[in-house]
Picture (tube, rainbow, N blue to C red):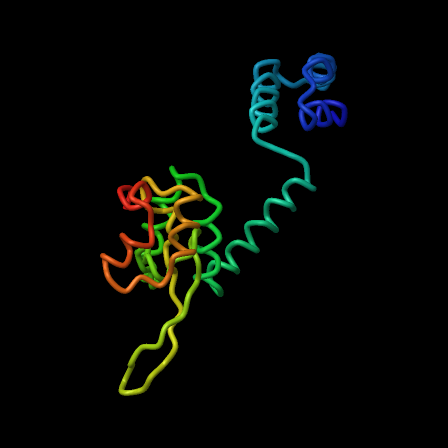
Length: 178
């Protein structure tokens, strides 16, 4: 049975077939019903399709623990990195999660956004006192039609005081994208 376990764990069909036959013979010799033994073998093989070794299990568990810790204790930084590194298809889900958690999320700003998503800080008045609040600011690249080169041009031309100022500082090809 140890050989069968190793074959299932390493997912090697030849070893599984060899030890499966031996397992059936020994079970029959011990008086077990063939049908029951075959059911058990099917369950072992089915479980083997979903199992992986302990080092992988530990690695996944550790990674899950770290992500849960960061998400709970540093949500702005955690979601900032998720939004920055995620594929476009996943970004919408992460933004929805930010909104569900009521994380402060700000749209792209031509004067304040970086190219990527960033954690920024602003002063707000809360209960009559000025306090600093951190928030997630979406980057210029999150706007449709803005590429890396355009985002860099926009950042290089800052600050923009008016729309006319923006038009003057940016080339017409850049501005038509905006």
